[in-house]
Amino acid sequence: QVQLVESGGGLVQAGGSLRLSCAASGRTFSSYAMGWFRQAPGKEREFVAAISSNGAVIDYAGFEGGRFTISRDNAKNTVNLQMNSLKPEDTAAYYCAARKVAYPVRDPQRYDYWGQGTQVTVSS
Image (cartoon, rainbow, N blue to C red; front, side, top):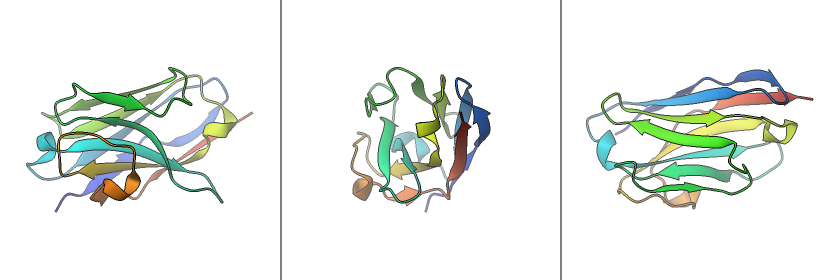
């Protein structure tokens, strides 16, 4: 069992930055692909970014336009999402997810563990 705990969310003005972190328990973190997803009120959960177990493969949804950067530190069992130039439409609950294989995917149904989420609110 893997437990994921997100942190770093908050209220920020448009154009600002936030760095989300996800701390994972267990000794198998380095073998898991990790992903970030978000869900705004009334909308479905959507893919944001994902990274392979060794960090060699990274995928972004595309809407972020180079504003977001995903990274991981397997020594610390953490995965991060640096978000710059935030926009009001980035407002959502952001979730960290782990997949019990090395390769990242975009489909949330293929992730095995989820955190509780951290709220990001961007004011205009």
